[in-house]
Amino acid sequence: MNRLSIVAANWKMNGSLALVNSMVSELNNVTLNENVEVVVCPSFPYLAAFSLASDNVNLSKAFSLGAQNLNEFANGAFTGEVSTSMLQEVGASYVIVGHSERRSIYNESSVLVAHKVKAALSAGLKPILCIGESEDERVAEQTEVVLAAQLQPVIDEIGIENFKNVVIAYEPVWAIGTGKTASPEMAQATHQFIREFIAKVDENVAVKLPLLYGGSVNATNCEELFAQADIDGGLIGGASLKAEEFKIICSAAKGK
Ligand SMILES: O=C[C@H](O)COP(=O)(O)O
Image 1 (tube, rainbow, N blue to C red):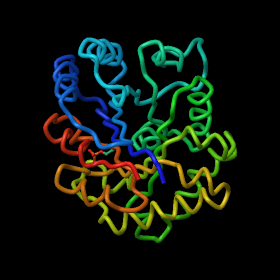
Image 2 (image 1 turned 180 degrees about the horizontal axis):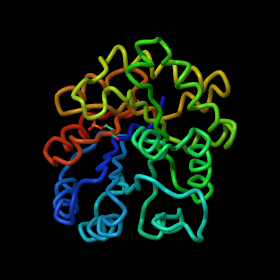
Image 3 (image 1 turned 135 degrees about the horizontal axis):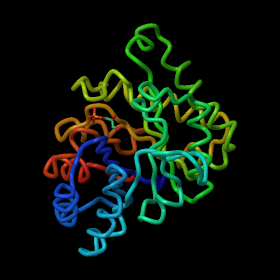
Image 4 (image 1 turned 180 degrees about the vertical axis):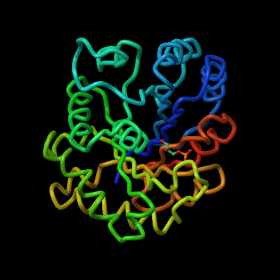
């Protein structure tokens, strides 16, 4: 099938220059399976340092740099914001968009998320588009409705053909940072729904789309999760800050 698997580290508002340097040298020793890419997304101030440290050790091209957010405008009076060209200039090639923490804490709507996805793509950055339901929504059996409502504005904004440069991360909100991972079967069923949702619009795009799982992935549960037919790696929070554990997770990913 030849579908890329991706393990993406979302450091959130954690980390330090020391972690950047130690992580780069640890990652330099990881053996990845074929067709696997690892993306590290530290906070904005550490992007350039990560780039430089990777260049210094000549880190394999299978390791990429990503940002955790972007502004949808090219430049201007947006204090505290960061543009796509700035991200590119410091070496980022991916950017996380629509993480549930941005949606809930910073009130980012699915329409704004769609604009950010478009801005990322226009600048040649690959968006890692996060979608996921809350615990109440799952209990109310609204998961599929919620996911469809998060995906549709992006499809409308960028057109399905542009999903060939998009990565989707399914992260059930109730599993993020809680230690409550979705069971591999539950995660697989939801990933299958997402792939079929995209396939209804374009089957070729759906087959190649990397679908990552996020939510309390760790060294113990990663193998079983990544073995599921529609799970193409993970978006890793807490466990991505511990080099030894993150290395195990990276090695568990296999291209499909
Ligand atoms: O972006 C990463 C996710 O929010 C998962 O975080 P976690 O692995 O700490 O649960």
